[in-house]
Amino acid sequence: MTTTACTSASTAATFPSFASYVRARGPVLLRAARSLSSNPNDAEDLLQTALTKTYVAWERIEDHRALDGYVRRALINTRTSQWRKRKVEEFACDELPEPDPVPAPDPAELQGLRDAMWRAIMRLPPRQRAMVVLRYYEDLSEAQTAEVMEVSIGTVKSAVSRALAKLRDDPELAVLGLSRIAA
Image (tube, rainbow, N blue to C red):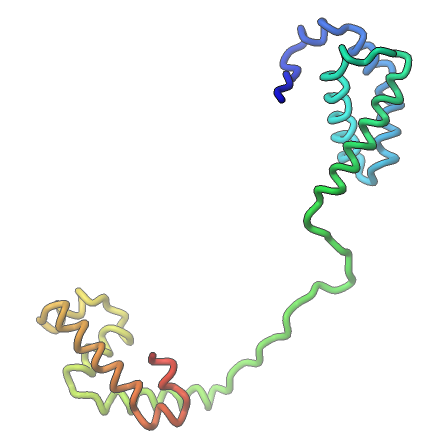
């Protein structure tokens, strides 16, 4: 179903009685719309939508003496449709629902974890250790690490992969629960 929209002032001249009706009864209809909506801006939008529906049906309305009833019914139906289409409900509350703050980790415990990780890295062979440090501590890419180490990118990938496997199997990290982090 296609409806034509009012695009210019000349269209209002086609139905001069519609334009005169809106001028004469607009304030009364706006009061009716405000009784249906608590927000004045929403009431104006509601009235505009109802008047648009009335304009589209203007030729089909037989009794122009009952226009107020027609527009009021359009207001009510439009408001009901808006109410039914509402998907998100908002509730006013005194406090915003905030998640419980996550307690900050103990700095001494974090230092202990860092020390255990560093001891495990120091147990790696020198070449693997250098590649892990460059990749994860210095945050270099595989290509940059290969350039610094003067090896191919594939060598960096395989050496880092073997080093991470050794770190996952490290008994000291397993006791601390860090073997899962390296996985």
